[in-house]
Length: 314
Image (cartoon, rainbow, N blue to C red; front, side, top):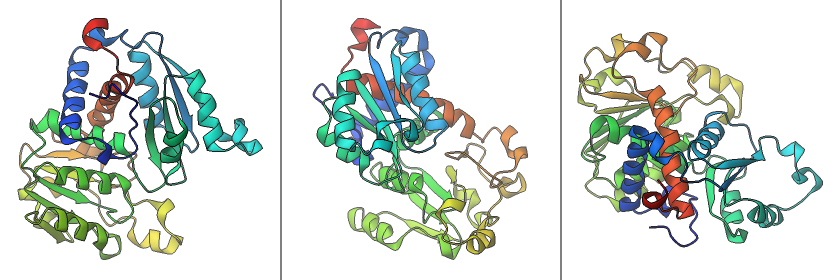
């Protein structure tokens, strides 16, 4: 798998089999981290963050360091030749000589794809605008596999901002490939999943069941995976609309008192006030472990894109 030059720009770049392989390898690394502590010794990850990120950047940095590799890069584009007007194509050509693999976050949709066309090393999209965030999807998949045992045949509910949430869009398209039993969409009218995406899903998977409701309590007893999202202030064109919707959903222990005992509660983080702190201690709340698991699935991705023989070097 992935022995030739490969990039990860969107979840569709990976087959279902490759996703499962990465998830399983990530779980193996999670259970046996010392075994993989030196498999990327001598390799360099270029961390190219053109917009702020806490979890994604640190998760990739942590992943490479845990594999024994090294880091170069930046988290402030104002300190780079970008300020002098250098093109992304030229930047990545040069970075290809300095590093073995690169992760890029960029505010402009399509920037990582452009770089992949000029790069001599694997490019990983760490999030481009409101477009794609494929390694968040891998993080979500590894969490579902760890806690539910399989990626298939679940009732998955998404609650919150389903209109602008790129993590929701990537995950729902990916889970549709894994025979999800039913999707339940919980959002205000203003933040519903785009109808174009719903049509795309139903055209491709005619047997898919999608139910839309306004309140979690109507459906909570059906749910296997509850994926909560933040109402994203930065996506609104005016503050008045944001203020009207920002408290649409606040998950409390009372909200889930009729939920299944083995339901899991996920969130891509950061949260603002959509999940109360009292829920953190509930055994079904897995969102902090979800963030931890993201490091290990990114470790798996780095080794596979680099073509590291982990059986020989581990």
